[in-house]
Image 1 (cartoon, rainbow, N blue to C red):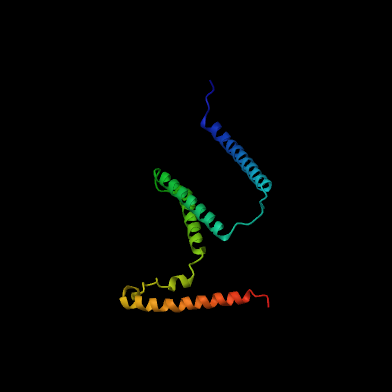
Image 2: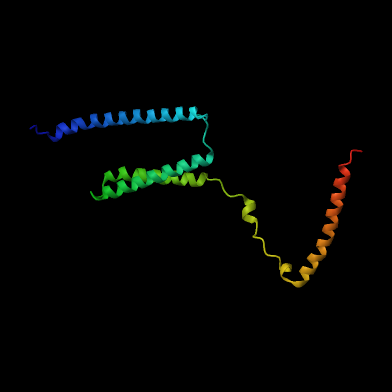
Length: 160
């Protein structure tokens, strides 16, 4: 059996990682091509830009993912101890937080009219007996108005 030393493994590690990165890039490009062809086959425009809301959702999702990965790496590196290697976890953590804050800052605000409006209060007159009488009196002229409108519509139908 061959005994591999740490030096020979360290020599092959960058080569293997580079080959895996190239394979990943080619695979992602191939899936992107397949997705584009499927959109064209279905009649969609593959070059259509995303709406600002979709862009903000993607920014928020990327920030949350990067921040959580950075947190996990920081916690894992804390088991070794405090040192310069914590930067490999803290950098993605704070970049993720920056993306989340950017998405929240760029989010469109609510319209001012919706904030200033007060909720509709129930009509106090609807609960009194006097209001029922007033409403009943108001309904009668409405019927007369409906009859007048119907007569006007009948007159409009005449050909002269």
